[in-house]
Image 1 (cartoon, rainbow, N blue to C red):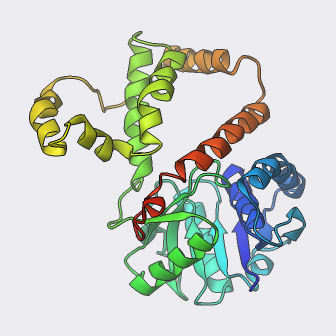
Image 2 (image 1 turned 45 degrees about the vertical axis):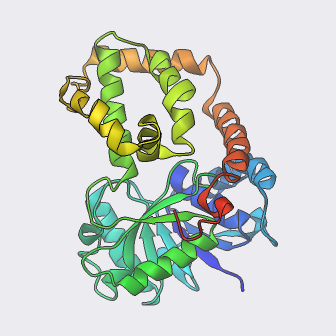
Length: 318
């Protein structure tokens, strides 16, 4: 049975959803008021498609299954799933989500790609079926990275969240249902903590942006791509595991190793960060860096899937 994803807003994240859905053999109907949106999106898909081909396309997958329409109402007609990706401004999102709720069939899930807002705040102006408006937060590049955080609001029923899980799994995503509403959800809160500490290290002259990135790329990042934070520390405890690790290293939590409060973004710090990143880019355009990242991720995904829980027979694990 053919599925249709309706995409509202075609920036980097919206285009990522489009490329992923097309690769899974879905039809995609998109709406974006920017005149250049169709051309920009098709160029994005063309750039991503070689990576998606290497990863493996579903039967019937084709960029030709993308259609742009000239209204939000036309975009949601016949939708199996709606994905909102407008800029991260609460008033704008609430306005667009209310319009989507009014236009779409009541049973259709509406996912918001918001990285920080809580779903109950997003649902406030929805009158028809507010519970089906949920957070469905992906990670860039959406067409390759499989995690999507699903967060229901006060009006969301368990059945609606379960239906969303099924749909996002059909898009080859790995849905992570967040148990409680919280700003920033789970992954962005973790990344934000690392980001703040990284800014302090640069601001205090401890390291350059390149050196901070090297610490992640050649060290903890390699472990995190398979095991994450908790299981990594579990192994750090040797055979006794996490209990021994906490007994041995727990006291270090009281030491001044981190500064979670962000430093002031002075002009000097901004210049350091920008100049550092431009040095790392070495004159390469972002499109070239995108392709290099995608090549790496395709090979990495091919490897790590051999070690994911289902490969060990642990079905039903995230």
